[in-house]
Image (cartoon, rainbow, N blue to C red):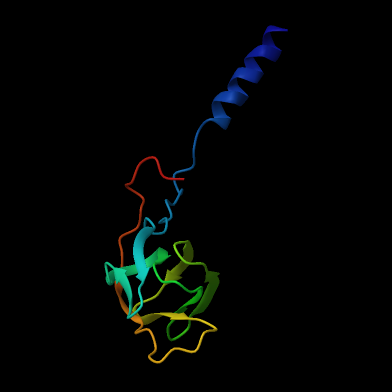
Length: 135
């Protein structure tokens, strides 16, 4: 019986040893949250410059009509809505470097289009390996 317990203890000790060739792979950058507003004249996004990586855009409709919100870029076209007046919508995307536009459209004929917001995405942000308490 003692030999059995000794063999089990040796086995558990060996199982707890890690290999030396473990590679700590980089995690993606921490997601950033951008705020947006749809007004009667234009769409705004703040901040309008950010590094590449995961982005969450929370946009509020401050007009009297419902609007569809579209994020457009070279390889991206994401649409949400319609977003009712005084309501919000969220777009979550991982964006690469480049220029993007955030547009608001509606089914109502307007004398003048709502000007889109411009969003500039620069070089990739640092990974989140050194950030604590992230999911």
